[in-house]
Image (cartoon, rainbow, N blue to C red):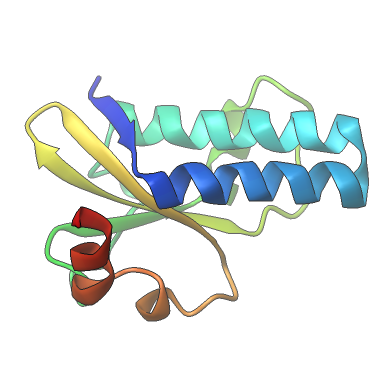
Length: 123
């Protein structure tokens, strides 16, 4: 199992997702979505190259993504009916995965992830 490191934008993404989930759908929904995100992160740590992961090297070398819907069966909470987020990540070194962003599936990833965005993040 790899270790995960969340970038500052990814931390902000998750906080915003959970805040929005709670305010729009209630505390129980926020808890279910948090469980789903946790299951998806565990899945990435267990198998970063998994069959459900997508190569997104067109955005940034080594970048991959996983839609959280693929982790519904692994969540310890009640199921989320229609998950809508995608986790973008990359291997930093053997055994270390960086979670770069967690974006809504309708967001254009090239506007939030990529070489120029990574350069800004590293500054």
